[in-house]
Length: 108
Image 1 (cartoon, rainbow, N blue to C red):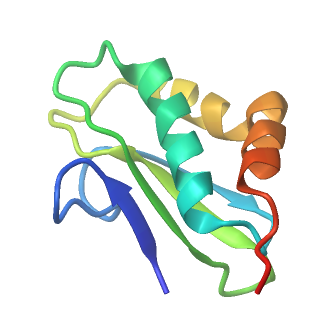
Image 2 (image 1 turned 90 degrees about the vertical axis):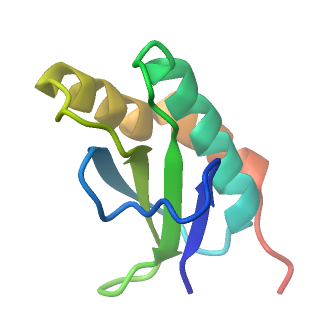
């Protein structure tokens, strides 16, 4: 099951734009995790005109854990420096630790 958090209905993380992916442990509260990731992505890229963050979370297909894809639809294609900034948000150890602590483990 795919969980998508977006301010605008119908936006998916499979279209053109600025996207990055990471993996996180399984068993986290997905909605809480998505909200925390979205906040950090927004803080990092809020000056990008017309940008609205999208976070998509689903179980990993090849392994245990969660597959996270974050970014946003934007045209024209943004410069590589913005992609590096987005990857930096997703791979930052302090961010990841905070997200995991906030999302906690599910009770189910």
